[in-house]
Image (tube, rainbow, N blue to C red; front, side, top):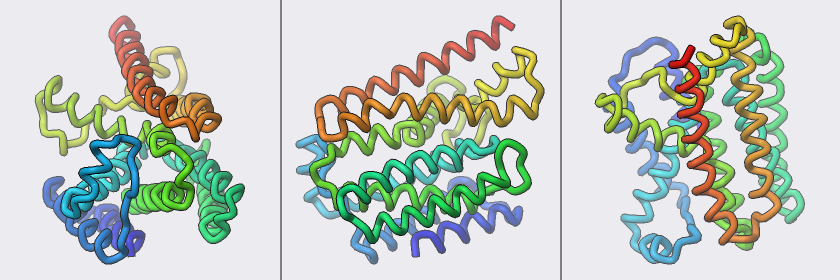
Length: 272
């Protein structure tokens, strides 16, 4: 039900049927309210005591879960645009979730993740480094929904793992939306719902062009470098997934790493 509705919403946009950003957000929220209630999706713990207490209030819990879904779905849609960027990024997430569930005997979810990985690999074959097919909004929304549900289910089935580990796993998707939202409001002074070309992957793409790389090479190199960096950055989280204190502080450390490289590449572009 999650996958079907959001795939269709993205597919309508892929057919060039114009939907105003505000109206599309309202549709997403409406879908999520219905689906979360109907499927009884819930988050048991967050790693923060005050937030856990608030989650006991049904209406707050509903809004919080829907907000989590919105961050991941829109994060996937935001980073989609360069060959392999979203598909390889989600592949890394699915492989880690597969390893967690397989080693802990959650075979039903592990089998589902295994087949999602196979399908994703098949798509990557035709999308990276040279693109013969694209995800579009429908594919981005579909991957976003699959990532969000898989993470929530894995968190519930493996209560000994720190909730902040899953925050570390999703930090790039989350912070891309979070940073973009406040950047547009306070720096560029525009609606946070409107698209722009100032996201990290786009800034990095422009930086690669200044180094003499061709547009084609820069396109797939963005995916390769960002996903490789992401992979190495989350390795400490994987090793310390049961350590809530470490994962909490490391999660916020990743924000500063993101902002540092964002400013670094913007400065390099200006100097060029």
